[in-house]
Image (cartoon, rainbow, N blue to C red):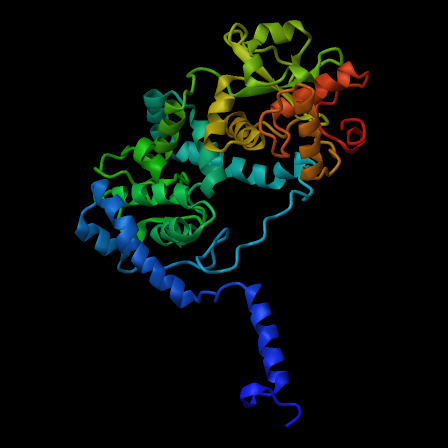
Amino acid sequence: MPGRAEGGKPRARLILAAIAALLALNLPAHAATKADVEAKFRQWLANDLWPEARQAGISSAAFKAVFADVKLNWDLPDLAPPGFPKAKERKQSQAEFSSPGSYFSEKRLQGLAATGRSLASAHASTLKRIERSYGVPGQVVLAIWGRESGFGRAKIPHPIMDVLATKAFMSTRPELFRRELIAALTILESGDVKESEMRGSWAGAMGQPQFLPSSFLKYAVDFDGDGRRDIWSSVPDSLASIANYLSEKGWQSGRDWGFEVSIPDGVSCAQEGPDLARPIADWAGMGITRVSGKAFPSAERPASGMMLVPAGTHGPGFVVTPNFYVIKEYNNSDLYALFIGNLADRIASGGGAFRGEWGDVGKMLRSDVLGMQKALVAIGYDVGKVDGLPGYKTRRSLGDWQAKNGLAPTCFPDPSLKAKLR
């Protein structure tokens, strides 16, 4: 009969089946469900993580007890669950570089400073003992404590083992979090803290100082003498642990973190960076002065200092000491370290905002800065990481290139350079 194929099937049905088969070739495999992932997670714990934990000295009983109630936290950022579609990579086109001034909220700094001064008085004896033991000034310890956890008052919401297990199993950076998960197991094995008390941020940072587990193992201390390193509920342990961290990272006792300065027009901004250190007396000899009008302390003048212009000529300038870069070990950001330094000064002596204004640096796209970096590298400049972020090597390379091409050095990427620097 017309319209029917061999074997009695309608041709239309065969055609549809063929189309479906072709489409299936371009479709992803059957997507996993959350239940599938949960089952794989339990297999991963038993077959993959346990052998590594056992090798690290974790007992079977402790391992089983810890993971009996651990749950995957599906609400965390940066997850890549097995069997799920991969998240699209973010294009490097976000506006990264509006004024850094927003980082230095005056209302927030004033509030932290007022609380910090009150706590400096309340914990004066502890802070004096800490400074004698580690050489780190109390105001710096208080500033970090305030910035990281609101002096221990901020809500620290997450069970840390849920966070670390989730991220070790299915995050975009599993190797990092796997190491931290093993470190967290080691902390629990030591008895310093109960699992129910071991809380942290979505990124795995724990307690009042916001230490990753590996940092806890290296730097946390028992300063209240109760036999436990408790950065969750003990103020002495939390403050001393921050100080010990900075001390171990190279804090130089007796030195400041740095000074806001005025840089004369004839002094190039392309001289910044920790690898271009020189005696602070030399910077002063170039006409660089403190904005406060005070001289550089006599003990600081023969010691090394570094120019810092985090927004180029569009913002305040600084001469910083090696201690500035020790603060950056806590959080690798110039603005973070400046925030801590400014807050510490406010706590210690009632200082205020930086005098220099943070200008509008053009709202550059990260992809634009990346293009400038590639162009500078192509003509022989060292810009550090070619990542679209204007670190000090990128800033000073731009300043040097501007000067060599008859432009006034600004030491910061801006839209007018896009067409000139290709």
